[in-house]
Length: 117
Image (cartoon, rainbow, N blue to C red; front, side, top):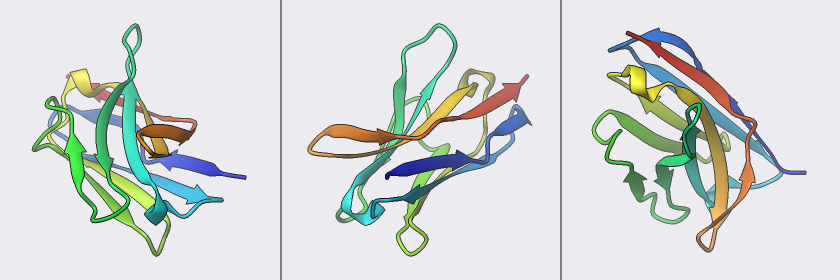
């Protein structure tokens, strides 16, 4: 059974930082592309960052480029999202996902990030 469990969300003031973690079980993350998504109330889910299975190439949404960093610890089977210089518009539920062949197959339950102004 595949499980992706996010943690690290919370309440932070604008300009602050948070580090999200996504611990995987039932799959080996090095064999999958891993992504972080977010969904704010009344808005569509958007992909924030992704890291490829091979080579570790990364992609970022323009809105978070130069502020967020996705990384992967294959030994711990965990993916991270370091979020710096947080803004109120970053407030959302953040989800971790694992995918292949351009499809996201597995999702976590999400963790709330709230940035106060």
